[in-house]
Image 1 (tube, rainbow, N blue to C red):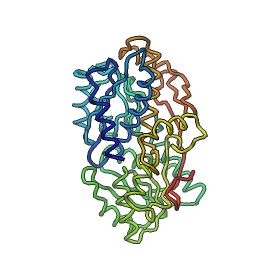
Image 2: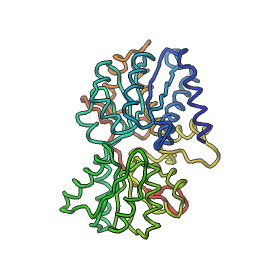
Image 3: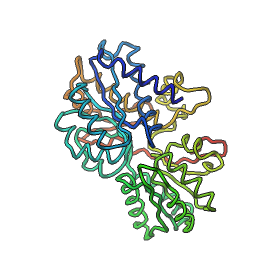
Image 4: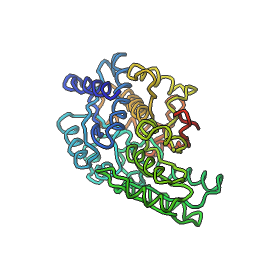
Length: 373
């Protein structure tokens, strides 16, 4: 699967100089978050390939130029500068990471270049409010995800002793704050906390601390690999807490890395429809388009669908922008995208809104390794 992704990305990047509609993307395709970054990029590439096979936009192909940032905000900024100045990108798509988005918004690079960014793999309030007029977000926020998880635990299951595992960076701090605030609304306090380093992904100390506290439930503000490692370590230490994670965790990575025996029963919030929910037109089309890129038995992941959705949204804006789309015309098209239904998933940027979706649902990894809702 990974080899296929790299080949698909390489093929896309190799034609960069021949296309007139350049779209830029900076994501980690290596390192701790590499699997998810590659899936986001492939999802976008899959949809753009479909459009190009149909003749592109007014006869011009869409060209996705993907740059690896290794989950490093400094590299994200450097990549973005190149995409804007050297590659003359008309728009940006599908970035990854809270710190990267914080630094990008703070730099005013989007505003100065007048270039829209569609979709980013973060739900932190710090990049949502006030955000940037040029950042069009496609997913709900961590605050909304945490609210849904805590409501289930506290109101429906009677759980009051809730702890948190968090990554030591802006992402972890955002999720940690959301959990504390949501508990405070219910006159509850944290029953424990554990932190891990973003660079190493070492969760050993956090697993020991939280296994000792052994609360009723732990909310994991983590990405896939550290979440998998933590779950294995925590359960090996005798921890019995119910584990819940935010949408930054890709469940298929957890089942593969931690093993089904550990992954079974982990709850995850999701901010997009299930990639297997064929009742939705969007998902049926996604499955058809993604099938050639998946090995037999592979699961079409949420990250793949997220990249695909961002590409569909941006493609619609390119169509509305008219012949020879510019940054300004694409921005205008996105700004006027009111209650746009992609086929069962609605994005709304009306009334100057930039937070296009509030969709959140809870899922759980089943005994057979699939998600139940």
